[in-house]
Each structure stands twice: as structure tokens, then as C-alpha cells.
Length: 523
Image (tube, rainbow, N blue to C red; front, side, top):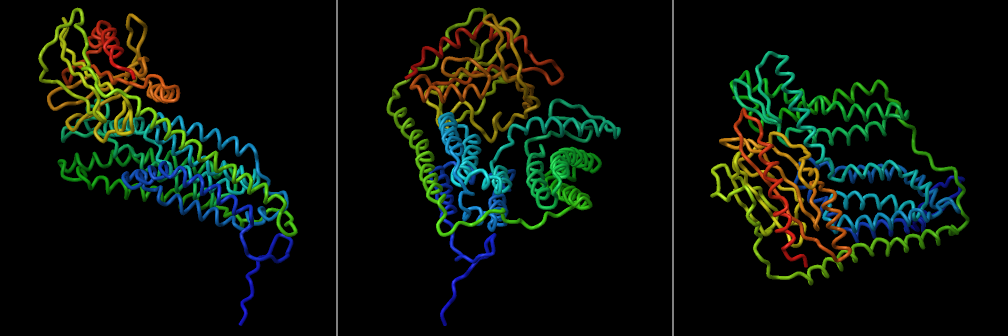
């Protein structure tokens, strides 16, 4: 028996074969170019999803976004088949070019999260370039939801830790439990506690945001109600994490540190978060007004092949070189840089500093973990008011596994607990200098640590400026060397951090340190 071809009903009631419109084929070509030519960036996202439980939700974002786009397939088909409805936009091509140039800078500066954000942004840029503004509006939410698969949010860890520690300590005080706090570390009569990265609540916050945004989109039409649900999905997990931390500390306190002091407190945390999320969604159902079915756009189909399909195909073909240019440039620049470096390097040495004497390594000496294998100098020096340790790490060439700014699993070492971290302005003869200050708890003492950088001849504690200077050096074939500068000094647990001591040392030593760095080969 002869099989009849499948037919679809168009917006005007006519029947057409169920084939893909050429405009949609052109869009798929452009999207495939982005995914293929930037596969390394996409694989870096996949690696983070697999490695970090905080961002494992990324595995779900992709199929959810695909399903959301699939729900709009009829309207998208009608749009693509309509004559002059899916008109390519030159603004999309310009945006794609700008995103590619920004991606190149992020690649040269090794800013991975920025690369990932830019590649995801290239997808809606391709939709705009190939199908135009109406298609972009039609697919706005599925494309926007894709941004939640980017592993971002690490910058929120420190403020979340501070809030959770402050909330917990305040709640303990209201409960009549004596507590002493130092940064994210606090002590009770029954034992010691600290709020670490895993307890910051970031994973609860990101998971709640992903669920809340999807729930608001699917079940609410009014913009105000959607905004209220998203706001609740952001605020509630932060407050709930504070309550969770307080309850866990109370369980440990009243059980003489036998309950909720190991991995079980993480399990309690997820159970508590699940309960809070369930209550949020149940409470919001009273506002629920489910959206109606997705209706196709009111457009008339073209007779035969749409005249715009040729323009759609041309726009897709123009997307190909705009996607391919920037990875090729990045590879060429990196290969050229590798060929120009010297192989022999002198030792990193700092001349004698007036008023300070070199002394043997102190019992409290601490070495910051480093990425890669830079030229390193560690020196202990004593002045009238005490001893200071200087650590320099000079990188001739910075790569992803060997650079100034690198994420380490234990940035302060296995036996150091971060109590507090903030930026501080230090008055020096040449002007004020911003440093990153950290207070560390060591097994036998506390440690005050100041760190900053000298990148391409510029002294700064601004990580973004370090990355920009590195990218500029690679683009202009100029200096790329960078140095991590750390000074540290000990203090007693109940004493004041010796900031005046470190300031006095930098006032005397910074010119000699900068001179020593300038004497290293810059290639």
C-alpha cells in the first residue's frame, strides 16, 4: 500500500509537506558552527558540571531549554515559512562579531567563565542574525534559560559565608548560647565551628534560582507574579541556609558534638532545602494562572520557497567565518608567543633592604600554594618591631595551569583556615596601594597575609586589571610576565593583626621588590 506523505496545518489552513523550512535549516547550521568551533569552551563547562556538585544542575538545563524551544516549534515553523517574516538582522551579525572579539580577549586572559558566558550569548546572536527579531522574541525564554548552565557564582561565596556565619552567631546569641566569632570561625563551649565553601549555600541558591525561574515561567502570566516568585527563589534559600546552619550547630551543641558534625549535616542540609523549596512552590500555587497554549504568529505563508530563505542562508553562511575567526586567531597568537620565549632564566633576588635583616626561616613560616612552577623567592626578614615573611612567585609566561590568578582547591594550604578576607588600602611613599588581606588560623597561631600582583610592570591587587594587562600583552606582543607578592606576619589568637608591621615593611621593601622583578627577562 502506498504511504501518503505527512502534512501539517499552516496558519491559513492550507496543507504543506512536513519538511524543515530552509530558514530553520540555516539557523541550525549557524548554531552548529558555534557549538563546533567553540567546543573547547563547551567542554570546559561540561568538566565543571561533572566535577563540582554546585554546578551539576547544568546537565538538566540543556534538555529543559531544548524542551522549552520544542514547545514553540509550530510558531517557529510558521514564522520561518512566512514570506519576509523571518528576516535576517545585520545587528545579529555585528553582535556575533563583537562577542567573538570579547571571547578572544577572555581566551588570552584565561577568564574561563567569561568565555563560557560569551559562547552561550552567541546562540541568541545567531538566532537574531539568521531569523531576525521576531524569532528571537519567540525563543527568548529558552535561550535566556541557557545562561543558568554557565558555572558562575563563585564571587558570591565569600558574602554568603559572611551572611551565614553572622546569621548563625546572632541566632545562637538569641538562644542564650555563648559564642565567640572570628570571621567565619566561631567557638562554643561544646566545640568549634566554621562556615566553609560547602556551607555557603551557593548550591542551594543556584538550584533554587533554576527551579524558581522555570516554575514562574510555566505557571504564571503576570510579570509581577513572576518577579515575586523569582525574588522568593533567591531570598528564601539564603535565609534557609542560615536557619539550616543554626539548627546543625544546635544539634551538635546539645549532642556533645556527636550529631551533625560530619557528612550527615550536608544530608540534613539538602533535606531541609528540599522541604523549603516544596513549601515555596506549594504556597505559590494559590497565585497560579497557567499560560495558554503557545499560538503561532499571525503570518501568512509564502507560496513555494520563501524569498527570504536565500537571505537566511546567506546570513547563516556569514556566521561561519565570524565564529571561526576568533579561535583561529587565539591559536595563532599562542603559538607565536611560545616560539619567542627564552629558555634560561636567572634567579629571582631582592637586594638588602635598609632597616631589615635577613633571618633564618621562622617557626611560623607559611608558604602559599601556587599554580604551576614559577620562579619563587621566600625570605624572612626582621625589623625593630618583628619579623615578616616575603614570598614572590614570578611567572614568565602564564598558561591555564600556571598563572597568577588560578582557582586552587586549597588556596591557603591544608592546615590553614580562612577567618576573614577583604581589600585594604595601604599608605606608601609612592601613594596608596590596595592589597588583599587574609586572616588565617594556623595550628599554633594566627597569620596576617597581604597579597597583590605586579603584572606587565603594573602593581595592583585588582584581578580584572591583571587579566586585561595579560590579554593586552599577548595582543600587542609586549610584556606578559606577572608576579605574585605576598607578605605575612604572625599574631596571637586574641591579639590585633600586625598591620603596622607589614605596612612598615612594604614602605621600605616595595621599591627593591619591584626593581628585582624588572630585572627579570621580559621576552
